[in-house]
Length: 144
Image 1: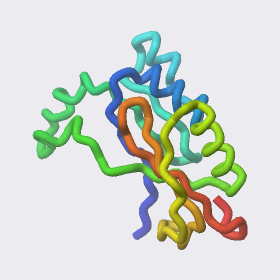
Image 2: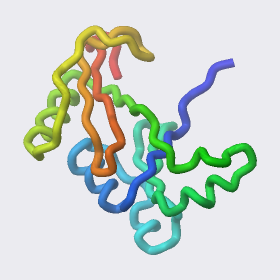
Image 3: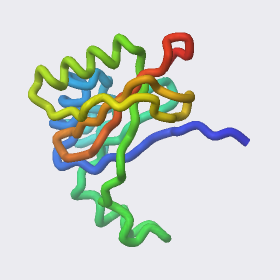
Image 4: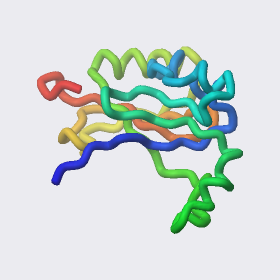
């Protein structure tokens, strides 16, 4: 049986602010932003690919999500990081936008193992809520 990643939840203080960061700096398209702003959706999502989203869930909802059976104490906790894979050109453009915007980025790491094999370069950065992201690219023959 094969699985695909459907979504990842990031806890954020302000989904609108976070959506703007991910749209303007990272280049991810918000989903349901207008519905969230109108009070018609409980959170904003970001489109990663055709079947994958990152949900920007307001931290104020953590108590309610802790009430799910078996989830006591789990909502609101930080994770280690989320990794975004892109093309070499996309990788360069993201790094340039982050540094131009004054965002801290780590030095490049090389030959890092991931879902598509070994990535020649990676780096890490944080969003406005301190969620850590990794950006990487694979050899162009491997695609995105």
